[in-house]
Length: 160
Image (cartoon, rainbow, N blue to C red; front, side):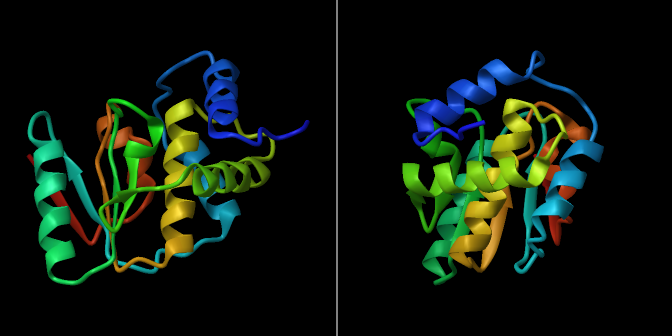
């Protein structure tokens, strides 16, 4: 199969590929994470809860950036464009970086089915690892404790 060369192509493929928006469980994501072979090289602050996750992420990102750290932020959903979900150093990640990350996840997943969100979460991890940041702030999505971001061991968990 020829892999998409644009972000729009990837997003279309991922939307069409998996019939369920949410498929709870961490085994599939953990399997592909391990196949990627990217170690957790920086502190991870996982942000979860019902209300206030976005505000907490924005505040923590601003504090860490002001202190001189290179910060990766992963949130969902996006408002205007997908790139808003993946930020490094206060800026949305480029289409090119996301396309490369989606392709890397695709090669690692083999026959393991991933949802749109799971594939995107792993692609964000790839982008963060490639950027060699100082800290990562993933926001827990609709999956709660079984959300894909929970395959990364937090150094600090914040519940809002």
